[in-house]
Amino acid sequence: MDLFVDIVTPNGHSYKQPTGLFINNEIVPATGGQTITSLDPATDKPIATVQAASAEDVDHAVKAAKAALVHPSWKLLPATERGQLMARLADLMEENRALFASIEAWDNGKPYHVALDEDLTEAITTIRYYSGWADKTFGQTINTTPQKFAYTIRQPIGLGPALACGNTVVLKPAEQTPLSALILGTLIKKAGFPPGVVNILNGYGREAGATLASHPLIDKVAFTGSTATAREIMKMAAGTLKNITLETGGKSPLLVFPDADMDQAVKWSHGGIMSNKGEICTATSRIFVHRDILESFTASYKAAVEGAKIGDQWDESVFHGPQVTRAQYDRILSYFEIAKNEGATILTGGAPYTPTDEKNKNGYFIQPTVIVNATDSMRIAREEVFGPVVVIFPFDDEEEAIRRANDTTYGLGAAVFTRDLESAHRVAAEIESGMVWINSSQDCDPRIPFGGVKQSGIGRELGEAGLEAYSQIKAVHVNMGTRL
Image (cartoon, rainbow, N blue to C red; front, side):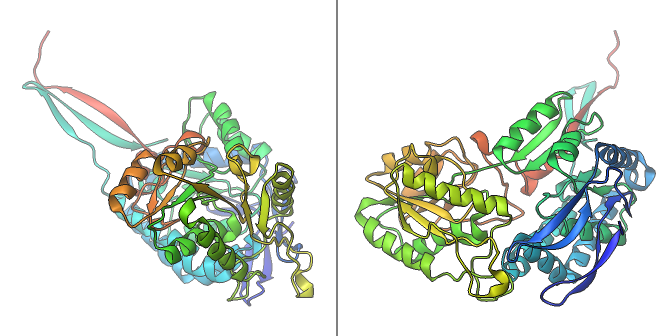
């Protein structure tokens, strides 16, 4: 199998797509013979086939990363220069922004303009942000007695904050979207990172992922994905007591109080669940609306949902692209039957969407769906669907809204809409989630910690808190004269 293939994206970008594994700054063949084919979710047609890492390949990559960790080219590299490498990588990502966005739109299904203007901006900004932290992670000197002192050193745990702290990395992308990460690997080499500092392996979770999570030379595992998979990773990582960071599922509540700005509440809550086809871990998929405004809010929300255009990812006017995979498409459709069988009402949507364009007739398109007349105990109200599906509930008072918002095993995000800032802060303090948005939804900034509580994860990414997850503190005690 060729290690590179020539590709032209539907919007006209010609490039060479790596198909092998990125280890020690080279694209190399996998050993096991397994492959992953990326499909265009708008057409169900193949884009490219890449090689999948075996357990042997994972071991090779881990050992390359371990060797790079202690090699002078990385270990002795001044922190300022480490930051400069990251800044150079951000520059290269900026130069290739349109290509990255094209690949992401093609194999993920999200609208190209969203990938270009939002996702790439966030990714590049995050790398730039952490490049500035590379030489600003300090220890402390602590005077303990007149004749003794101690100091602490922040050391790497044996992208983004991981590199800023001096770690080396083995990255396994999601197997559903394997293409863009390999392009990133070529830019990492071009930026000047030493061999082995970043290694990128496509592969299946059952082999490559499991081998990474349990490998004795891996010191930390950071995972983004489903709660069910996170549980298995915790079990595998427990064998060697690895440091772990987990960013998992959610069933985020959004509360609309009677004094809220109705127009803004509708717009933010619509984007809070329906953007990116609902495939967002923080999606505000449970909307609680005060009974006094329930009818007017629901009518406006329904109109917003029905007014958003569905189509392929290359149309600038499209809001909803196709779901990422056929399996996810089928899973979402199954929840419509579950909801109806449990007694809920589908107000709008609840079915596949058939494009008028013949080339997209086999795409994974779903009508964005609003469900009402549900109870908190129904599966549609408790389980993460990971699609454009929202449930609207009424509430009568603040205490009820908080109690029901917290009646979930998840705790990633939450939103509160009210003009009463005292009430907003009071409710935000009581909601059990890692993040709360007041009069907005899905705000994210690389300077602000991101993560959840309960079964939505462990630890935090982004911000200064994100650095702590990728370094460990060593205490050194110095005796300046005490004699025994």
